[in-house]
Image (cartoon, rainbow, N blue to C red):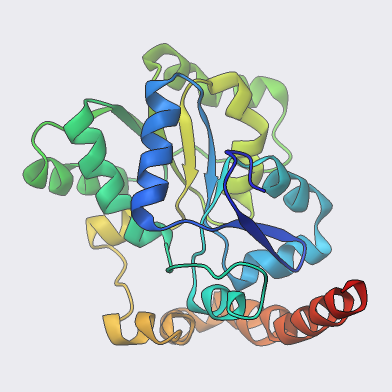
Length: 257
């Protein structure tokens, strides 16, 4: 069972909540309206593999309020588990409906992360589409898992002063999940979402894979072709061990049953 009371599944050592995009939007709205706050992660195959080897990352996921399936392989694997995931909810697909909801409900938003200037470009495009969207601030500081408490204080000061309802944290994994886990309680009742390159996609500074590739589980191949130097180890070495993790899980579940 998930943190908010719904069904969830385990993929390796990582929890994924059984939700539609509409369900997830409703949960976020409730977390804001009821001043509960929380954290939202969007796991993909690489996150599953990071949970295998990084205890801090695994613990951050265990404390997340929502864990939404970001990636076709996660959804496909669920067909063989206790509960089937109804659809893929990638961060870059979720952010548009989320911000439309924020505009409709008057929820305030803060953009955190991305390269310099990206948040401003994204904000300009979003305000053209959603004139009532309340973007109360944005910042793109240098963030690392080894930041001192005083460095974290300096980064959080402008956010704490503005008290946004929703914070988009776009630092990439595992940095954004570790950062969110570290500061979520302090920024409550804000809802913090780890959304990777979503601001870059909105701003147009990074291109998304064509829809047909995303819908057929090939978005990773497109991303690899765009940034081979940075991503080849991730996709061709670490993530290539994903079938072995699934095989281990299926064997253990069969033994238990």
